[in-house]
Amino acid sequence: MAEEPDTPNENSPERISDAEHAVMEALWERSPITAADVCERVCGPRGWSLATVKTLLSRLVAKQAVATEPDGKRFLYSPRIAREAYVGTESRRLVDRLFGGRAAPLFAHLAEADALTEDDIAEIEALLKELRS
Image (cartoon, rainbow, N blue to C red; front, side, top):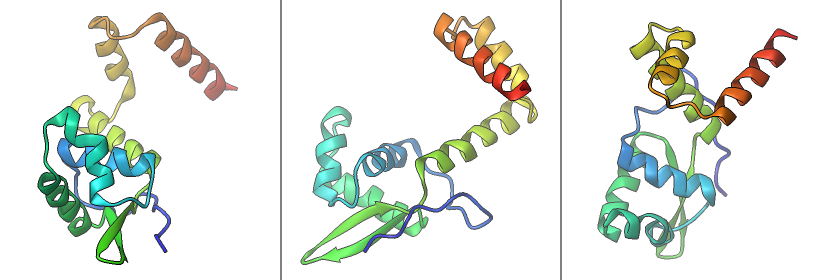
């Protein structure tokens, strides 16, 4: 039986590459699944082969981001980290690395680059209001 995804801690896996992230998204969407199932979700749009997916899955297993379980002659793959935990860790790394650990400069940059829609601004305002109450 597959393990429940972990929350991040000092034993969190190594950084996940963009290609590995695409595989993780497929696993977060549905798991446990086979390498062929992952390929059905990611190979077409990215021009990858099943061999590429298997290589990426092997890397993710080595990084302890993905668990395997035998299923006859094949393996089933499941994420060992929850998507929410991964997003939280990566968001913090981004803010720390690019904005000195402060979120305000990030929002200022997005606003200056016209990257925020009116809906984004409304969501941010609602979140700030909720945080203050």
